[in-house]
Amino acid sequence: MACIASILVVALVTHELGHVLGARLLGIRVAEVGIGLPPRIGALSWRGFELSLNWIPLGAFVRYHERAAPREFSSLGDLPAWQRLVVTLSGPLANLGVAAVALAVEMTWLGALTPLSVWILSALAFLSIAIGATNLIPIPPLDGSKVLFLTIETVRGHRLVSQQVQARVDRAALFVTIVAFAGGLVFGLVGK
Image (cartoon, rainbow, N blue to C red; front, top):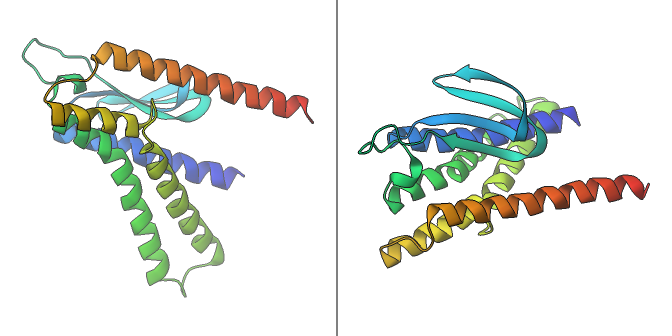
């Protein structure tokens, strides 16, 4: 179980670091990469941002810095839609890249790898693909909902809804997810 949890954390961190790389390539400053959802257990600083570990074990997130100056593009929301789309898609693409590398290593050195190594590489590939694909489902707060909104925005030439409305929808959907998760835990424990 600990091995699967460790591989899952690697796949989640890969996804979030994909977003970080996409943001940094476009000049966006990252404030925090979190594993799990707040409240925070602890954090450490690395390369100008914080890596945090949080109590609620539902996914991960990247928090971007707010704009530092009126004409500075340091906030993700300030960028044109196509650039926000690049940052949004960079997480799932990082997952697919890690899966491709894991499978290539597995196929190239299959005879030389131990059964445990093959299992770890297969699990990493599977979980990376699962996280990347799941994040492309168009429901808030997943990346897929952002891709949908950004695609519509690109076609229409203006935002479908304000950043504030989209943030509220994401928070509401996240709240529903947490309540459903907690309810599942409670009813799962009660039913035993």
